[in-house]
Length: 318
Image (tube, rainbow, N blue to C red; front, side, top):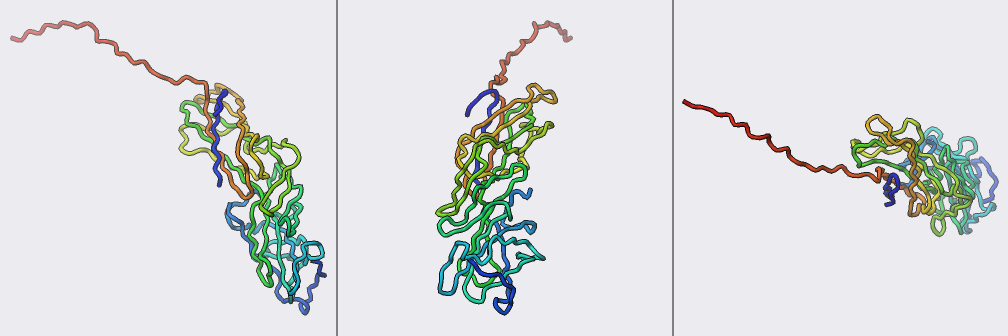
């Protein structure tokens, strides 16, 4: 633990080419629909396993004949980047419906949210995002899903997985006597752009520079953190970042040190360098413990003032 003016301890916890047609004589009478879920882990971050009905995702379908094999080039797509939304409880494309082919089978590859990234799928690399940059002001929870092979009827089950890493932060102090008025918390010196593939394992390749600043909290009023608080303060804003090595990434803090209502040290700044590696579909909690270093503990030297000189008071008992 490095001590400067203040010390901050941070613990990380890791949680086909076919012509479109609507002819019911040529195709099955059942339109293709979808059954969505989210893998465990602000249009921002989705927690839990329920895919929100307010979201929209894109899906591509690949066609295989009864005796053939899947072709993941443009020639093998049954449809490409079709926009899917929840319409009266059913996940489908409302304006341009597709139907199950009368013979052969389909495989589906999807991403979420719709239009948020350049998405592709092939047998070598699996699901891919190319040149994705996270939106610093309105973060995107980038996800992908792949269906089982050889589907001939639906609804199509799509279990979305998070491609990014979710970060969230708490802060506390055990040092009595002071209040730390937290005014800023941000993450700096990390990559914000990269490309992703799922095969042979989910992997990101970062690009660009480590310039972005991800703000978690910023307010001149600040948040009071002191030892009287029974539980650490959890910041509402959570980050979705490109998985990468966290070595060199910094947590930036700005705060006032107060005793009672008096500000004794204003606008103090502390940068803490992280370690470890972030992985896709991983949720990481950074539990920050902040204290003032370089102080002398209050100790005591007890003595006793002796009794005053005896007072001799005669008492006569007759």
